[in-house]
Image 1 (cartoon, rainbow, N blue to C red):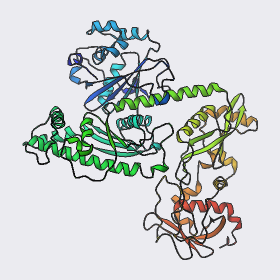
Image 2 (tube, rainbow, N blue to C red):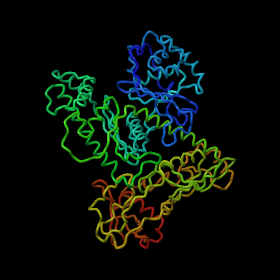
Image 3 (spheres, helix red, strand yellow):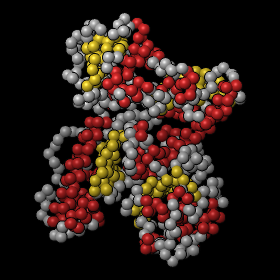
Image 4 (cartoon, helix red, strand yellow):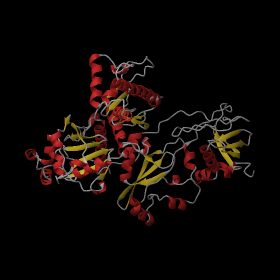
Length: 639
């Protein structure tokens, strides 16, 4: 690991104020990915106390990433202090400032070997001349930051050389569908991605820095969340600052005392006999206890029923339950989370055997960045092959995300390519979804759908409790239905515990397709434009000409009037007729009341044969749609 020496960090520059939008690029893939032929890239993690750098020397072989190898794995790491305002003076050029922050190898790559002999007079012209000697002139620079002020200064420095400065955001690592919540730090998401690169899902990362964070994923690769608190040094400094009698303890003292416990085999005593040791042992005990609790909860949540869950296709499974520690205090965390706390503090009484391992990794963010770059470049290459292949795609399985959910809470819909349609020399692909809906898409959209299917595969089948019609006078719930967990397969939570002599079977997928709104087709087309159908016509050609301007959407699911009514006027359904399938037989009934006195609300249904049941909103919507299809058979429709 290279650490820039102090004499190379005598930074002198007056930076004019500039907005990041003037020179930086957002991470728009695949354009933001390193171009083919680039030999070296630079990644930067701009943190709260230091700037962390890494170079990545790219293999010339596009097949280097076989067997899970990473073509963009980092090769050299170093860190520098923040760029201070006091150091920016005397009109020193941005190129000069940047050159003083770089080790020799990347310095010569950017400015040329001759520039090493002119350390005090490196110029932008040197960088331009050197760039013309490379196959790809612009250096790709990828940045993850938690310090906006330092980001602006770094951007200014990189603008002095031929470069493409890309600021990464949270969606580049995990999107909302993968569990990322708004405001989750991009540094935390990058470290999670780095841990997944090494060990797979589920992942748990402790990051010990100015702030201490922990972040986790589950077996299916979705972000569980995490926690944020003050770091070790922040706690010690806070005690010293807020209490006159307590001394200041430097980070170096802490590390030396930890090293002493390792060498001597004598942990810090619980009943310390000096003030500094009393402060340190208390902080260490707090982190050790919290960390063990977090690990226990992670194993409980991430590995529950793990035999029925699988990580996303193409990623590893963290079978050994490896916990990763990173950051400036990551090595201390790694010891505290070991059995017997690594001998740093006295061991607590033996508890449950959690069966996990702890591994240190100082540079997870850089590995996380390299992992997504590898993924994006692979996607670009696959897309190029796709466009050149000329093969038929009929019969291939696809997946697509929509802003609506199926009954089990999943908004990824699967389907198959059923037909290729040529309109004015342009090929469109007919997609028929498993629920009966269909749409026509361009080749570009088809590629994205094929890639999404590779990632998620088929919908995971989960056991459903047999749905049985409630017995007369008995409801499964005492007043209220239990609220079902979001994202789980649909199970009729309102069914009684005692089935009515025969089990209900799962309704055929055809019913989903048949439950489309009954508005005229022209109105539906107006609400959700669809790509052309097979029959050739002038209208067909006009639509084809505009297809790149129209978003692809599953027409029947763009609007649900029944769902809107359920949300806006739930009382309007009282006295409405409903229908429900039990073991292949359709039963009719009437909604007799709506009750929202306690959450969640429910609609009480009395069937024509005297049985009763409480409906959740999802059950109500399904039964109303079922009635639309079978209402003609309702003998009591006039009631």
